[in-house]
Image (cartoon, rainbow over all chains, first blue to last red; front, side, top):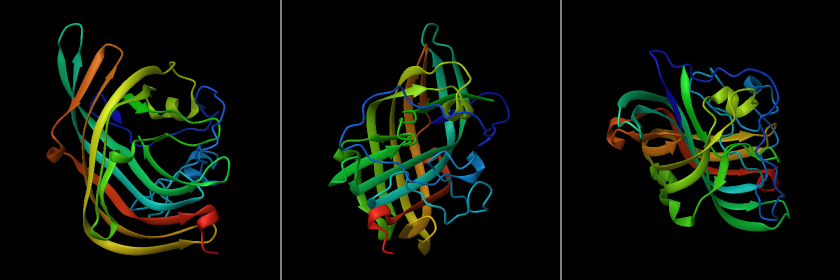
Length: 125
Length: 137
């Protein structure tokens, strides 16, 4: 979920650099594995594609799943709306836009780290 | 200027912003009709502040956050069959619409979106996909 302040929100203005890997932890046998490819827009090393109708990010037929060795249902949506931010300490509120929030679901059979097929439910937030 | 970016982070494996959710979090799935609901409560994530920082780092450190959300896919605008041998996936999808209501807390701020019905999708799709070892070469 992505919220912007100010009048203009940049959609997906990414730059090159080192990936911001999550806090190291040992992989579990049932952890899903990422898709092998990645969007050229992000340099190819980030394991996600962003299909768009006008191809402004990736072509509309780009892969929506982020998990490989997967057989199931995938949903993808880029959603706009408004959100109210409340400063907890003071109660002050301001309305802000959220723009192109990328939300995805994946539900089905996958082979994770240990290669065994399992049923899984996942969300890209 | 983006001020909030809630996501679970990138796994050391490279798995991107993807978290396991309870089985009940995904319901009402009918890909042919374009219907599905994704709903979860109090999901532990991080606020990376903006997308560039979330992917490449270099900015302020992320802070723990909690989000709840409901996303609804609905309708059928177009049906497509995709098969990409280079990328190694195939599927049958509908291009459709989606809406979302969400809330979250990060640092000293609480966020509550407007009702689901006030949101709209720039693009949405729902379908059946096979990739990797399940891809029909």
